[in-house]
Length: 426
Ligand code: KL2
Image (tube, rainbow, N blue to C red; front, side, top):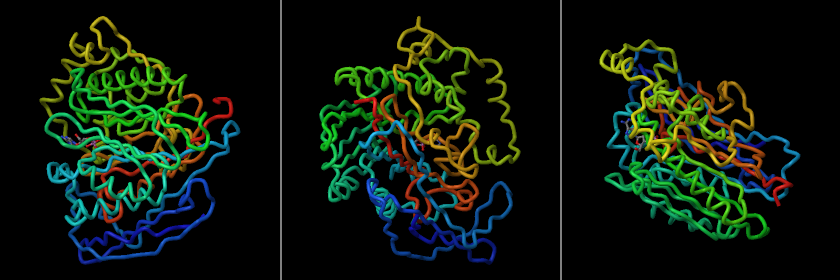
C-alpha cells in the first residue's frame, strides 16, 4: 500500500515551540477499480499561531504528527464484479465558517477561507476518485461543479429553503452512470424545517441491469428536535421506497450527515425496521448532547441549572404535535423503515484507534463544540461494501485542535466506501 503525503500542516506554535502536523494519506485508491498506486508529491508550508486551550487540558505536542487515511478491505464472497465507490462529505458551508466562527477558535483564518477550503476539498475528493459524491452544506455549488465537471462528473443540486443558502449536491461520473430518475425533497413542504434531501436513480453504463437508488441528506442540526429528525428520515425513506419499487426494487445507498450519533435512537431507527420512539426523550433521540469534546474527553463540566430542572420535568413527554411531526400522524406511535439498512463503516471493522464500541468511526466531525460521528453511508439488501477509507485515529485528530486544518477542508471528514452489487441481486 503506497502512502501519499497530502500535506504538512498546520504548523502550530504553542509556548515557544514550533510544532508540526502532517496529513498524509494512503492512495491505493487513485482508481477504485485499479490496484496501481500513485504516490503524490509532498508539500509543506508553515503557519504559526498560539495554542488555545480553554479547558486547561494538557498541552498537545504536535511535533511530527502524521495523519494517515487508508483503505480497509474485506473479502465478501457475495460481492459481484459490478461495484462503485461513494463519498459522503459535509463540506462546511462558506457562510457557516463566519456565522459560527466560535466553533473554530483554533483554526487559523487562512484555513477557514473558502478559496483554500475549496481547493483542499476538491483535491481530496478527486484523489479518492469516487464514482458518486454526496455533499452537504454546499453554498458555492458552481465553484465545486466547475471543478468536478472538468474531472468528468455530472452534478445535481438541491438548495435549502429559508435563510441559509446551502444545500445538498450529488455528483456522479458521466462515463460510469446514466441518470434515469431523480427527486428533490424539500422538507419545508411537509412542515419539517428547511433541510433538503436528494434521491437519484443511476444505471451503470457497462452493466445496464445494474441500477441503484442513491440518497443524500443533511438532517436538521437542532439536537433537541429529534421529532423533526425522525420526521425527515421517515419521509425520505418513504419516498425512497416508492422510487425503489417504481424501478423494480432497486438497492439503496443512503449517504449524508444525519446529525445523530451511533448510540442514538435515530441510528437504531435507520438500522432496524421500526422505532418505538415514544420511549425516548425527543431531545435525546440524536445523541448529540454527549459529544461536546470536554464530555467525550472526560473533562468535568458544570451542570446548567435551568436546563437540568427543565429536563427532569418534561423528560420523555411527547406532545401530540411532536408525534405528528415524527410519524406524519398523531395516532401513529411507531415509525417504520421500509429498508433494511446497514452502515458501511460498521460492516468493515477497523482498529480501536478509529472505531468505537458500535464499530462506527469514533469521529467524523470535530470542532470546539462537537467530537463524534454523525456521517454514514448506509446500504440496503442487494449491496455489500467491500472496502472503506478508515477515519483518522482519535489521538491524531485531537492534535489538530479542531477541523478544518490545512489539508482537511471541512469540520467533517469525507467518508469513502466501495460497494458491490451482490451476486444474487441481479
Ligand atoms: O452538525 V452540522 O453543523 O451537520 O456539521 O449541521 C449544522 C451545524 C449546520 C447547518 O445548520 O450548521 C451548524 N451550534 C453548532 N453548530 C450549528 C449550530 C449551533 N447552534 N447551528 C447550526 N450549526
